[in-house]
Length: 425
Image 1 (cartoon, rainbow, N blue to C red):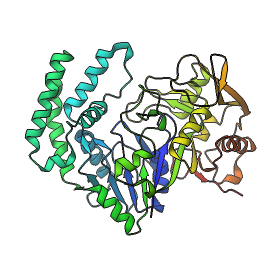
Image 2: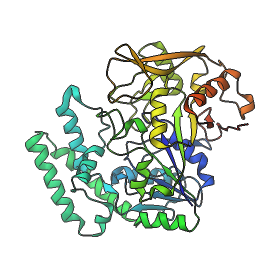
Image 3: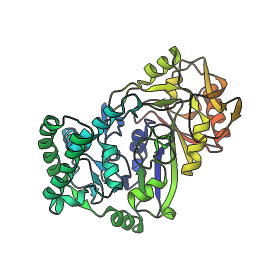
Image 4: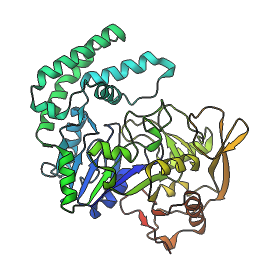
């Protein structure tokens, strides 16, 4: 057996949580392989709307194994709140949620360092979610991090040593008043640690590979999006982990030949949260119309998302990096009321039109568009592909021809049931 991977192809917020939930019945195991609690995967089913931050999106399906892999960074405070909210819905996670010993912990001082760093940068800040994720990954790479497995081995002294180092940085370098903030959250953090310790903490790299040997099917769920990858995204306005398919190997302990299908998820348009370049961003009424129609506000932060037309230059780049085998198009219904829809097929840079994603996206990158007629039809009630308006079929066909890959699923609404599996001749 091989593990399939599902990930975002844009700047995150593509709707990965919904599709993981939809695909979960076909899998025995759902895993998260990178990122932290800035990920907000929204699921809607049975008149329930729930946002997951750290826990895999297969948790609401019965008899499924869910694994938080070593590439994830975990905030015990957020984890406890998430567990509490899921249990209130009547779901018991004690038997089917496993956590990697090698996953790193977000300490209270990591969150404070995140805020202090953004404050010091001023106008050059990157737009961090202030969840402490960047500082946690810094400590991980600097070989100074604390891992979930450390909770079981003389943890308090390790915690004190690391926290003391952070305090010195905050006072001596950032000149940041941290004492009251730390006092306010430290008790909650240790309560979260006790909840974390009540779950099954294992060597997940062995666990996952053993499950594959036993013939179990595995789906690896990515967080954020390809264009936020630490190596290949729009640096430095990126996240702190590898969001691409290769991140599933390092974030779970899988050999490359153990990767099977790669599902690439994209919106029928584009969005971005926070700072950073965005070639197709719309600063006019059309951008506002997209935001309102798509309810484009961060599921974790509530921040309004920047909106723009679909960018095929960036999408081709993401498909290449991930080895995507199937495309999944989300939020087609958001474009229901547009008479004309634009798609970016190239960038004009200093008078020259290019079709490749450049080293750096600067202000001189201008999108080159084609226009397609909109469908001006309510898609949210559609139950199968045969009901698609011709204009939507043409929109999908245009994307498929440009990408060289078929769209296997189209989403026409936020609910689990509003998902159309495409049939190809």
